[in-house]
Length: 346
Image (cartoon, rainbow, N blue to C red; front, side, top):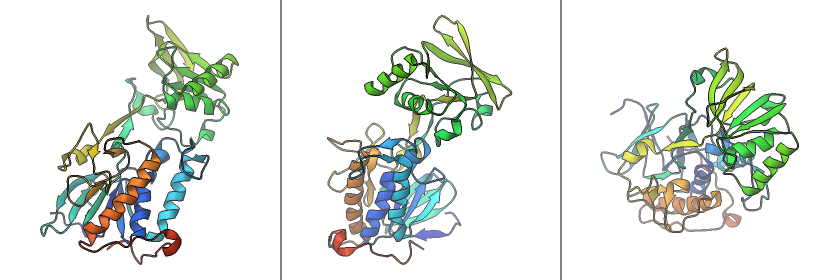
């Protein structure tokens, strides 16, 4: 057993994306304290890491909201319950305590947490970019090559090459066309796999000379000093080369998702997701719940608002794991207000 101090609390939330953050709020409304573990260095999950400036349109009562702003408001909403965040740490092991009274979670940083209830809000699991197989690419990452756009203003006046044919590639090409000196979109086919309206706008900007469509081409090589990019070499299907002078390369080839250690915890799994009881979000392990994209059941819709609803159900069900046999008297927030918890955990 680790010599690290043990933090004891009511519930552990694995994942600090939007659904994980709302789980913190719902646990707090049930007067349950919690700790939160996330492999990223900041709360927000993919909303913070991949598209903080991308608008979201399906949050109730918010006709349009930037993903980053949604994260900020969720953090603010959870703040009265003083959650303890353990960021930049991966949840490694989960096992019952010796007295079988709680779950013990150990992180990659050696942090040890114990709680009767665990809510897994891990999205699609730990994620990372699918890197193109280009020689020397590692040296350019973080200086000239980026797999996400945190602030589009960072690319103002630059020559930007975007590689990919999906929604991310097309959406950022449309957005950066307003700030970059030049936007070049490299795709191996002339047809894009993005939303039809977005593809139509992409072609309209290309016809207006504001975006260069480099199709059908694929990334072939990088030119530069090993850190600062000077050009991207692309090749067509016949091997003919083309040199694109560029300051920045944005490869958008999707994410590699992996449940990681979660897959070895004894949870029932179905196609890298965790089946749950849709009325409580309970998994096959007692006291362990799953919400958001990682959870599955017949008819499941992968929407943030669905995850919010699941967070509420899981928090109420978790109360029984923390206080067996005690009924949680449900009252609307207009009656209770926001309860203040004195501390998040030991």
